[in-house]
Length: 226
Image (tube, rainbow, N blue to C red):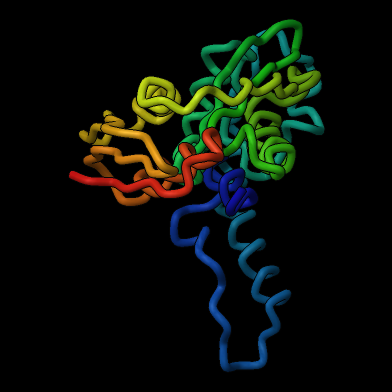
């Protein structure tokens, strides 16, 4: 999946939008490593005061921030509940949806978080990397030592390729599309083509195409119309 380290940094509040952009090459003699060091020093001073006001999870240990939840960019540590996990993942979902996927909280029990990667995120070969480098990093930053394990549940089997099946699969993207005032509906499927009526952001439109092709391999061409 794309930009996983960026997902984690932005979602945990570690980088502003400007800081998240790649550092341009310069014509002077500063090496990239020196530039990164200078940025790190500035960033440390900015966030030092925020860390003093960290909110600890209820029932947490008395030792302050644990090693797994004491990241430089942690502005707040939440109580580990399914509702809070879902809230934290809202910061990651736009990036997953842009790649044609999503993530669903299945359960939270005794420190074990069970997640289901949906769409392209669940079926692509890099799904494990998505979990390890993006989602897990964000959750451990926000819930600290309360997280004992993060598990990915099995993905659904491939469905029969019909208009109804494709429409049902797109339910994973509909909440995000609706939030942007858009809509999506599959009009027809046949001969490797899928015609979709779509209104909304172009980035999510690309995610729709990826989600359909990943779930239904016999669809090779997705056409979006307004």
